[in-house]
Each structure stands twice: as structure tokens, then as C-alpha cells.
Image (cartoon, rainbow, N blue to C red; front, side, top):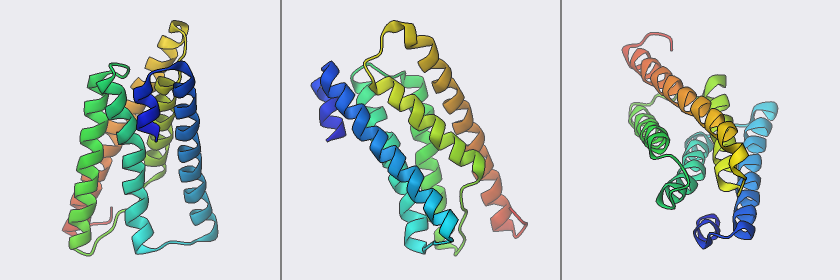
Length: 162
């Protein structure tokens, strides 16, 4: 539905898409908060939640790039990192290892979601600098947390504390 609304390319459908995206982002953040607060965790949830995050980020980013409304350079960085982390988690899972997200990765997700939300909204050009600043911050956090995951995975597989 989100992608369909974006493709329609009308201000009203963009606002509806932004609302749908915001609800999806908010429920994802709420789900994580409640799971941590109540100490509820399952193997399935630990695997599916990050995958859902990747889809929540990936679908609008690919669509916005196709519509020439999101910078390709940022999309490449975000999508390559997200794909690499999914593959890394799968690989670690086959070796009986897991790697929960750190607070910086949670900040990365929040920053990415904020940037995407700003790019979905039909904002006037006066917002361009703000959108870009949030996107640059999200991209930097994307790279930093990607490197952190790789280093932690290497340590974990070598038997050192991650």
C-alpha cells in the first residue's frame, strides 16, 4: 500500500504514505521498547524484527529512488549495509550465534526512519537542507553501525567477547 501511494505521486497520497510509514515506524519502535521493558524475546522475533526493519526501510527507499525523490548514493549505502547485515545474521545463525542490536544501531534506525519520512512528505524546497542533514546523519550511522556489526561478528566467531 505504501509503495502504491508513493507511485501515485500526488501530494495527498504522499501525505497518506507518510502517515502509513509513520505508523509502521512507530509500531516497530513501540514493539522494541515493550519487548525490552518486559524482557520478552524469542528466537523468531530476534530474527524477524530486524528483517521487518529492513523491509520498512528498503521498500520506500527503492520506490523513492525510482521516482527520483531520494538520493541514489544514500540508497546504495543504506541498502548494501542492510543486505550485508541480514546475510551476516543468517550466517551467524547457522553457527549458533546471535548478535542483538546495540543502542547506536537503534539510533541509526530512528534516524533512517526520520530521513525517509521527510523524503516521503511533499515538503517545500525550504526543507531540502534539513532533509539532507538528517539523511547524511543516517548514512554516517549506517556505515558506523555496519562496521561495528562486522567487527563484533569477527570477534564473536573467534571466541572473543563482542
